[in-house]
Image 1 (spheres, rainbow, N blue to C red):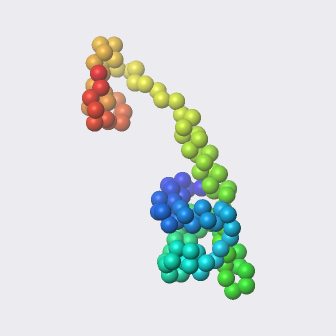
Image 2 (image 1 turned 120 degrees about the vertical axis):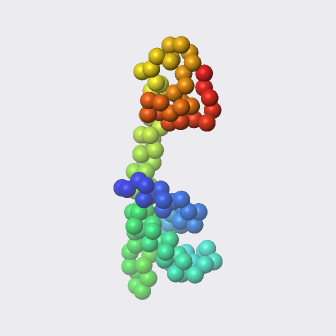
Length: 121
């Protein structure tokens, strides 16, 4: 799974709603277009991006392709976020300014830390 590609695909309200719907039942582009009250070509663009991200797959049923959500990709994304949340924050203790109680690391961007707009003491 390409996490960034999946997140970009889900960063659109319509595509996120399409995935939610397709988790419940498979639907063709025309049924999705009716649901969203937009044209089929508009839905095709959204479905293509979701397919490329691995979030949906299609199965031909007669003349139409019915799409369903790929639960494995969504579960993998969920595990990815769980792993991120499990990371423990490691405080900066490598510089001497912490001993003096006047650390400026976070406001000046020293030591490779993420900078903050608030001054910390």
